[in-house]
Image 1 (cartoon, rainbow, N blue to C red):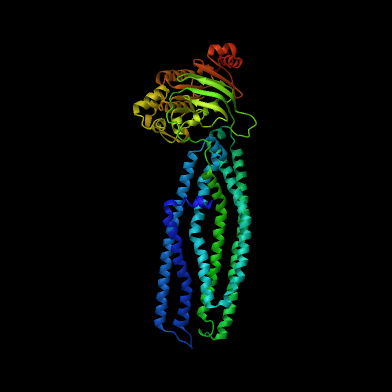
Image 2 (image 1 turned 45 degrees about the vertical axis):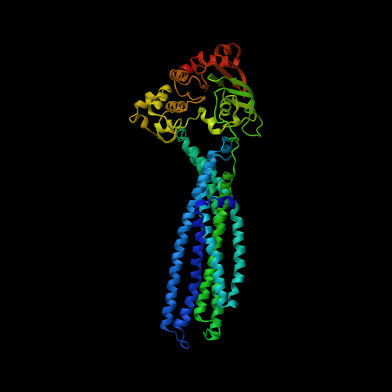
Length: 587
């Protein structure tokens, strides 16, 4: 895991390496300053028996100033390098995760859930970024401070410095116990964050439904419950962490008192003589080293805390980076879709391998290129699942799907999906102008081509009513256009691809039957050689199709033309009669 994350530092390696080098300079100067202070007190200021001199005061004062300046410059440069490298590391992580997600199949995305992926791209990356920066600085600074200060303290008085050997194990055991109890809580918290994001995302997407059903109180209660769960877990974690500061302070003050008491005895005993024992300056520097040593341990503890928090985040990030799409382009892939013929050769499909029932079962269907195919069936009959196998949004569990006479799995994914245009059941527009959205179908489309596609999709009339026409801004999700307008814009976008296969997944449900008929007539004139698959709930939308496929419970019940199915297919006849006798869908 660490190796995979470290490889994302990439172009920021120099800054990442420079940070600990500058930290060494800062720590070395900080370790030297107390010793220079001791020399200044003992040799520069001196005592009654051994008076000092102004020359030594200026000498040691200059050394103090120089050490402080070097420490300051090293610290500033270390901080800058750490900030640049950690921010760059986070950027690379987000970049790699985002690009990895673009290659995911629907099955991969379903595995993680949208809310979880968003949490991993935001909160988890921020946690790892903070941890990385702390590792570069504190994880280098703390051990070095501990090492340098111990060496200097031992140099002054090895016997008194043995106090640290008692304090260090106590602190080490305390930190370990706190961290071991805290890590599982943070693991649980980040999973709860996924649920929180899911609740918020669902609420914002369905805010119109929430308000129309006056369910604000219910949504607030749902949010409050999951928010309280996060609060409770964080309180538990903070209670554990709260023991760290008292433990540190107790060790620091205890060691300071013991060293001060022992040092004072040494000074009295030696008469403050440098040659015969400890001096006042040495005692002061020893106390300073005590604070530095135990403070470095506090830094270590906080570094461990940050690593503990980010460890769960790091694991979640690596899960995304390690995830391999189960739908990829093969070697020596076919790069051209010859025509729009489609063959389902005894195809079965299920969304999960351990599902008890198959979504599609033994589909044997052959569609010639250029045909208009209507697909009819009740809710859950497998209509959308069937057409999603064509551009390999999912792969068939059994059997073979052939496009243009070639197994769909042998195509380059980009080439296959460029040859297939889908207008999905849930139409999606993106923030930007109408032109920006239309160019998703063809980024090189001219204004004339866009207008022609919109006329065929019956979108041009309402676009011309907008003050800015094709430069009209579309809000995120297309919330400033109606359902029918959104559907027509999505159809126009698909037409601009001039695909070999066009799939309309119940994508004219929000338009009236007259407009629906005009759109279908436009298809025949604009893309006559394109195979057109129309999923619809209304018989009127498919009755003039060359082939009508009737699905029920994931199986093909019958295929044929409108008149043939009226005679022999009971399901088709029931649907037709229910819609026509009472005026049904046409009114």
